[in-house]
Length: 355
Image (cartoon, rainbow, N blue to C red; front, side, top):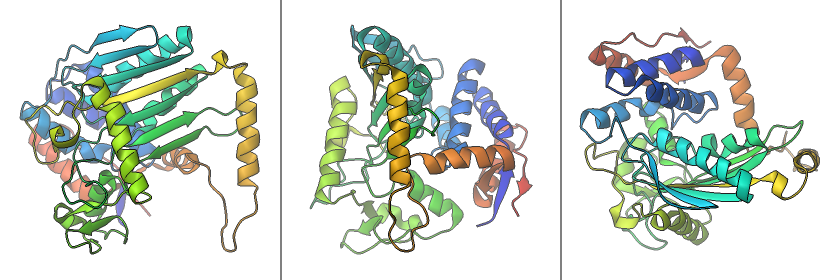
């Protein structure tokens, strides 16, 4: 795959300048750009700058509120519901995480849900944030388009509905799980299409139940759930918790933001934050995590297996490698971003060809 290497700083500046050009306040544009660039830095390329043209189209069509009043609309000591006022999802979820962290300091555990939010990028970005405060995070979201039918059905009433968990360690990297409840997140399908690659068998099937391998034909089929009926059930539960509980869209009410740039999506997310100090000394917990991580990594492997990975380790390694060498951006996506830069009248994204 041919790609261009760009620095995290240059990628963030490019994204920020695009949003400022479209009227987002500079502080908001900076925050969203930082999170989008961080997504690409950790290898979540289906949720980073690849989404920028789509976000810009939605802003231009009036589908995003550029000056939202993000506020708490329901609250108790250990919970809150945040109304995002149709602002950029990165801003809405970041506010929800901040509120949950502050509440967890007092209550030990805090749940904060969002409504009238939007697509916010990879779930792990938000599950990781409590780690800086000796807390752990669990994140749930309703996907921004339905690509999953109920098990045995054909009506796409559910989305990829991701789950993420961030668990702090001491000397080891944190254990960070970020997974869709489908075999592949739809962002990965979009990334495959942009790179001109085929999908592996098991990601999608067509309406006759046959494997669908061409990502350009993704609208002719649907994603498959993890674990068959179990993944369907998990997607349903996540949607009820992240969407229905907080008054956000679920089922037929979910707007396909890939096709509709104007209608308010009313996207729902939820963050659960647990303060480790409520359960004991955080250092003891993190030492125990280190011990378990090393046990798992050092356990006996099947023939031909070079390494047992922990959740989040590969993203952790990509962060270090991409910071040093640059973030690879597929040349097809680079071409789209240069067209966008010309249309907006901003400086193009610069990088160097990968070896």
